[in-house]
Length: 312
Image 1: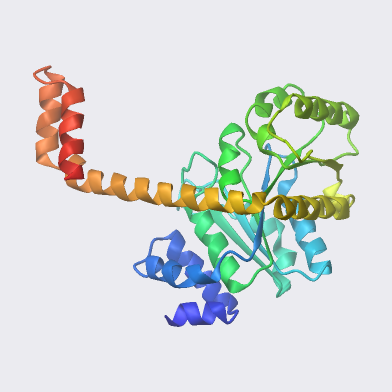
Image 2: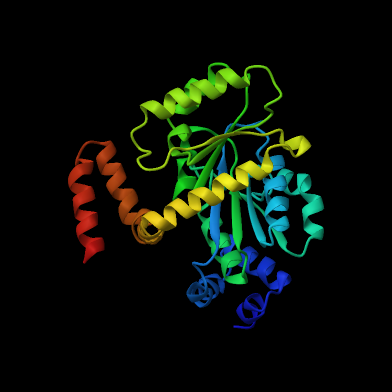
């Protein structure tokens, strides 16, 4: 395919068009993904998550620049809340990162969550693969701050960083059960604010209670992203985690689990679409609903019948 050939030859326009094709489910989207797949698996994927207002976009911007200083090319997938009008991304993140677009070694793409509960559109995983095939060394996925359900980002990233800020009060209690458990490293941004030391201690205490982190103790870094302070230490921590994953063999496990999750999600999606088209959208199903409503039949045996027919 011409678009794939151009993408593999580092055409930024082809990369942009390919992501658009996948995001909007154009007819050639599956063919594009099929052809680029053998060229994926080389980029290192970093997930950045955390509550709204934590300064994730500013931090992402500075991390990208630090990686460029270290000679790495960077792709950024910025997940925006879906615009209620167009269904597209509101583009807030991309506007904040405008100065990055002048660098040929950085590619920024805003994507809409499209109502995905995990705060991460399934299409984001495809965008990561396209940037990977394009040849990006590092890909940063930055999510909308919606709290608990952001654990989905773990399924896309090799290293997950949770960004928090001082002065959140009880918010730390609300988010700790969900996203604080998924962090491979923690960054306290806006660390010039009051309450930074207290927040640091709270995270340390939660890490003590969390049995998940065997072999790797998530570091806690402090940054003032707006001033570019503390960024080098964060990149050093990410690189240290990467080295740990490679040496322990856990990177292989993470990527195997990712493929399993992706295929499972694709299977579920295909089955759901098939059932919607061939079962739900039929007169026969409407008749069954009427019978269930009048209690002539019950839903349990109806579901068993439908599953039996679908599996045949």
